[in-house]
Length: 402
Image (cartoon, rainbow, N blue to C red; front, side, top):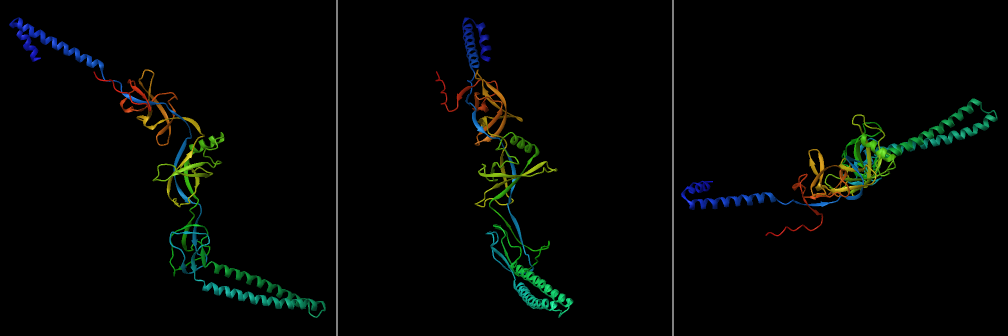
């Protein structure tokens, strides 16, 4: 502006000054014309990668958190009282059914068994004597040699002797059973915990509630996984099963389920639902379900957390788009679709589960022939012109500069 003012001021100096003013004005007009042309051109529409939704047979799944529990769990307790003599396992080892675990001092029980057998022998001897006396009495009473009362006394003595033998035999069996209880063997196969009592301690046995706990055994293969689901899900499963969807979780269907542990990304363990409870918990409004899994490598342990995936629908043909193509607007999800005029159009969508880690099921909002922007969504706004490029096609080369 200073140059322009000086040029005007010089115009009063004659024709030479007027010539200078004319040159400056021409330069300014030319500059303004070039600037307006640059503003009218603007940047080219951004290039985006587009693709159509993928059609695939999919199944809706629900996921629940639960815990593993043992199919069988046994507390090993003494059935007779005595001093613990020996322990025959290492803490935490796998045991087989029938393996010897503990030994209680058996000497008192040996003595009790010997005494019971001696009592049985005496009773059997008494039976032989009273039987012979009874047999002689039968003939003597016929000959009127003895009275009927005397004969009845002999018959009673014989009956008492036989009863005494039966009692002695029961005592022998009891003593031998107690003797066998001095050896505690594994009632099931599984993994045993640590010993709760060391040798030399007195253990209390019997069938009461104050018996001594010696160890605990839990079965490991197979193993149960328990989880809970809400009442609405239960109703959905049962009604889908009533419509003939055999692969949906329900009380009457043994459906396949997947499971993953807390350090795993995929549901790589396969099992089957084998039980759904008969009541809904009144406090939580949930019902208990259970699945069974093989555990040959003993990875699963009772009490361990996991996540189970349960089929919630029959297989159906769904539309899938890359998960990276999904945008978020507050609580709503959307995709950008390229319209016939090559402008981006926003579509709100209803989503399903993730498939193969990269594809997302879209239940509502897109059509099979829509051109969805799968790459470059961050550079595009709804209504903005774009340069679409088919997914997998070579990138368009920029025009050569002149």
